[in-house]
Amino acid sequence: MLRTVIVAVMVFVMVVEANPGCRSYCRKPKVEGVPDRAIYCCDPGTGVGKYAEHDGKCPHRPVCPPVRAQTFIPITPQVCSHDGQCRRNEKCCPDACLEHHTCLLADRK
Image (tube, rainbow, N blue to C red; front, side, top):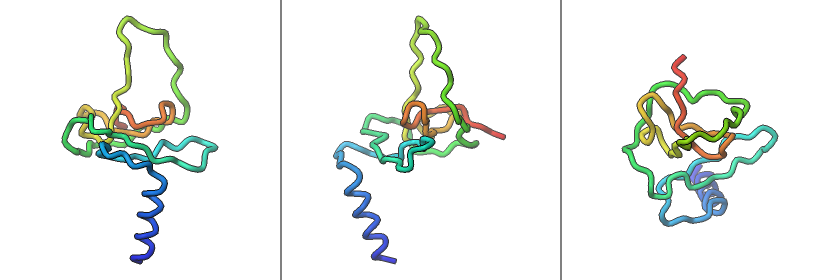
């Protein structure tokens, strides 16, 4: 068992490029047809908010929504590493369209 843990840690360290400022690592969202999901720094030390886990589930988005015309006020997704960096009705979810974690409206069904 200990050998398995040591090997797993060694593989993780070799796969993830060391980033001294990184506070949290996340796995890239699963993309259909791509077997490997890379690990990336999802909180380079700039994220705020105490760690929290909000109610609900991440919404299932099998396809990316269509791109809308630019508005006067650009809407950019909130990048996150945990629910505490999102509004209470949102969850920090992997976003396959953007290839990183973002705050999305929680599915409460």
